[in-house]
Length: 173
Length: 192
Image 1 (cartoon, each protein chain N blue to C red):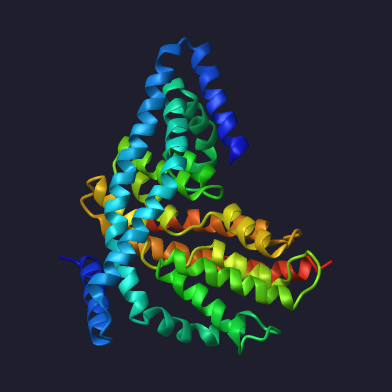
Image 2: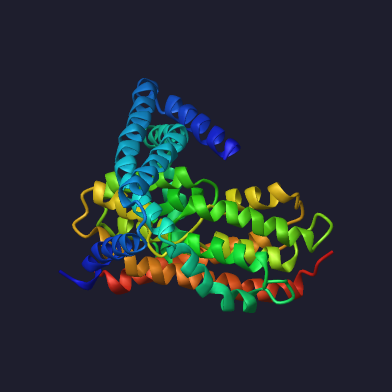
């Protein structure tokens, strides 16, 4: 048991203890939350299908190999494994696509490979930039977004670099 | 995403035909949608755990506590905005919900915050405050990456939680970089 193993059980206990202390219906609330989770999965399933169909086609035709070989020098220069190329490309555009890509990387290389670890850290620490900007600005009628997208993309680049470095530093092997 | 998908799917099929792999098109597509179903089942199991737990956290008022905690930082990040009233509260709720991974609580608060920021600024160009708000949102604030954890668990990782610390450092670096860059760019890229 390391300290990290305590985070999740600890979080569970704290949440349940506070819930019980506040006298909220813990069971019913959990069920309502789980129902929302099911609805969310149902909502993203069609786009997951579209994306994973795309990835399988690219794998079967050899196109994915070529894309990776093209992007490999740039990624390796930044200290990132070439296998994460497809994830790096779709990350700013689609959340469900990125989730699908992460699952593909786990399937091909394993979740504890360097590619699997770096991909996990990248997905866990970044957002779907174009979707978020389109949703928030579109809803209130902002058309000129000025430096919003360039800065968001730059900070996502920082996120990828940091993820690569931290995995090499903290999880060598 | 639309054009990207079209180019990738069309390109892959054409490329497969050129390299004499026409027979593998249909099996590949079925394999793809099949993996999507398997992934969805794993995600459903994981979201059951996390969204159930997070619903308890929200009802217990943990979100509101976290939002109160954020207020002083928000006053620093959005100078010149009326952050004392509802604007500050909705921004705080949005940030706190993002940190706790409650996307379904973060989005409504975020949209309300944008509407309030809009009232202070006529025209169709984003203000510096809006840019700062969205840049922080797109840099991700999530402290516990529940989807990634669940997927790692489902894929049979020996240490699903091993990525927690690297993820936390990466997200902190990117959020700080986003804030600093936004402060720099607002001088170079003046409001029209």
